[in-house]
Image (cartoon, rainbow, N blue to C red; front, side):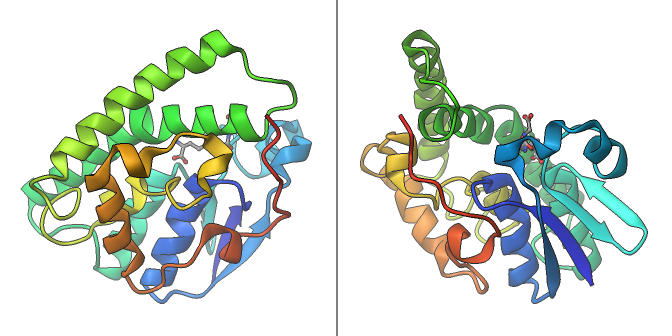
Length: 213
Ligand SMILES: N[C@@H](CCC(=O)N[C@@H](CS)C(=O)NCC(=O)O)C(=O)O
């Protein structure tokens, strides 16, 4: 059985948990105590992920990190959500790289600073991040005006990747993207209709923490 090292506040972990559920693959959740520094612990890094990040997926003796690599592996192994032709696979990869560099990255950082950071966020840093998010959400919103899913007419792992942080409560980020970006909002509703979808806090392990700042 797959083992997924994960925790409840992580949209990157949610991407993988949701795909496992969509593929109807049973898995065991292994709680990563991120909020108490587990991913910074040298022993954890040596045993589990030298990059100091969740998610981590174990498949027997194989251990995979980076949600994009994990999604690609699972899609290929189970023959779903990974595209068929070389062009489809490249289109998926293109969007997942954009997601990891910008779409998830800026938004997840902003949300973490606003909701979970140990000290109050610096307004200048938040203003800079918000500008980056405005730009990147605008790009995806425009793309979704003419595309039902991120990489074409059917859902793929690109959708699992880009939507990973969009199912958490808005008050965690304080960034009201559904009212500003209606095409993104409509797309997340289509994603919720994919089999296996559930709210992140219902399927990932660990305590829920009220937003701090
Ligand atoms: N690109 C990575 C990002 C993973 C990531 O940043 N995970 C967070 C938790 S959601 C983490 O473990 N961060 C640790 C750190 O940045 O120190 C992925 O998609 O898996």
